[in-house]
Image 1 (tube, rainbow, N blue to C red):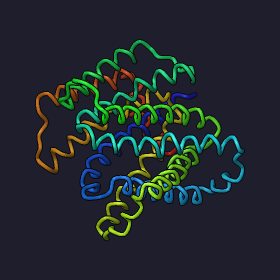
Image 2: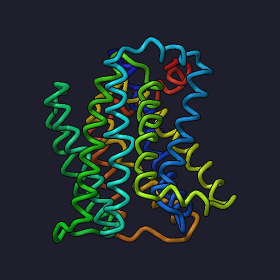
Image 3: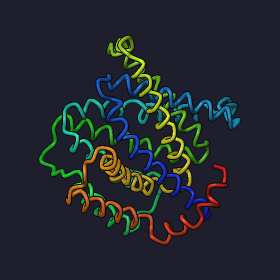
Length: 308
């Protein structure tokens, strides 16, 4: 893989991290007084609809007809273990645990991804990534002002969701060897939405549709558009770089969310969070490599003109 492709992947996943930071900040307002399961289903479904439009625009929709039974099976697995089950587990878990605990557990996903990618994708885990991992764990502890004291039912559900997402990212990385990023993203969001719909029907949560207001639909549109940007940049970037490196870069979303909170709500960083942010940025920089980051910045104009 060329250095330009690697730089492109890093730039795209960095974009995903920025989008993630905005998404968490915005969704805190959108999910208020909203059935979380229904909210997840509708924004995921809208993102899937946007992906269909992108496939049509890029004339890739016809490629869906060329997919083999094996391809559809893999996409169905991605939709199940990445686009449905973990969302349901995560939201249920958050209702039973603290936000800090849930956030910290979710941020450990890069550890499971690195292990799975090393075993199944034969990705090499350099020593600097292990050191970066230690910095990232410490950074999250400081940044979230969280000290683990035990695991309750909610924590275990969030951990299960995180494990599902780790598995899905590794499967998706493997699938991207033969399928386009847009088709893989469509599998996650489109097929995942079908599974969530089945859950809503059998659990009775689908009845909450009747209580939706025009304001709810505005938030769904905003969140769905952001999610579309997230999965588009994520899967395209994942095609060009190791999945273990990509999940490390995603951790930059946390300080971005806090920066937005400071700008728009006047909540400043605490000294502990500042230390955590420095550790997070240092960990990501170590994982990627300063030279690679510099090369990515220098080649950004060329990267923008290279089609995915």
